[in-house]
Amino acid sequence: MSNLKSILEDRILVLDGAMGTMLQNYAFQEKEFRGKRFADFPVSLQGNNDLLSLTQPQAIKEIHAKYFEAGADIVETNTFSSTSIAMADYQMENLVYELNYESAKLAKEVADTFTVNQPQKPRFVAGSIGPTNKTASLSPDVNDPGFRAITFDQLVEAYSEQTEALMDGGVDILLVETIFDTLNAKAALFAIETVKESRKSDIPVMASGTITDASGRTLSGQTAEAFLISLSHVDLLSVGFNCALGADQLMPYVERLSRNTDAYISVHPNAGLPNAFGAYDQTPDTMKDMILPFLEKNLVNIVGGCCGTGPEHIRQIAELTSAFSPRKRVV
Image 1: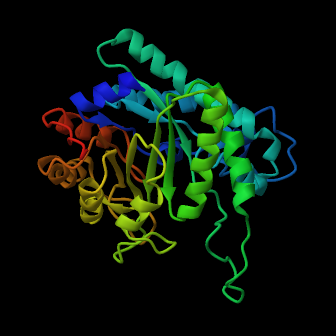
Image 2 (image 1 turned 180 degrees about the vertical axis):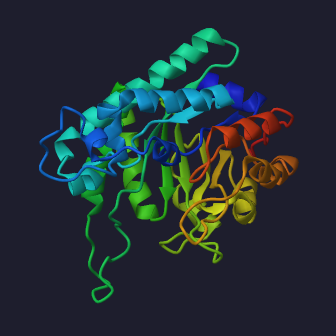
């Protein structure tokens, strides 16, 4: 962790862009998702992007490489949905360890190649830990608001399995991201801290929440400050926001985080808001202009992209951030 912290003190680090957006360009169909190994699997697998780490590993490595070539310092593993909870939709709970382990190995192989070729710019891998498709704070049934589809202990068990596999696969960072329910995130962070303690590991942890709309709150109802306080018991490398909104919409909430924590600050916004067809229209040039105020105000330490962003967005962000100093932490 000390090497990463020293770099963060020196310059702004660039996170990669969207994995799903890039995979859409490959236009994989059911056959490609299945590969030879899952040709006879009993349910449809198209849409299970995390499975592509096993069935189309070369595509995943190509995407990681494109982001590193564009200037990213950190890429995320293809594991956003790789928990037993989310994989239950595809009857693939038994593959969770392998999915995370192999995804981490793929990303680490690419990162190590770039680091060897450019030792002055070491590359890192963040293990992506998503929110799952079940929430501990909210009921999925409007007629039964007290009902919960998942328990805290079940979440901890699922996140522990994912954490173990990501660490075994060699990730440098654990990134709990797209947090819309802070109780889910608390389960993830509890699992991570337990695994770290058992392994005597000091692997750094990033946490990134999601402001869902102009109300300025997460889906479970927290403001930026409340979100920050809820996670303050954990020694985080960074805290920030990603997804749901574009950079300009996220600015005021990142600003509030920046004033109130001694952790580093991250932001990886969407390429604007989706259009009527669910696509993202914000060009790399426009997104760069939206990121500029974050740098001028000295708000951030880690910047990347989420939905709708690709290597050219990251290239523009990397070029832009190189001219600015990182935010100095409030100690």
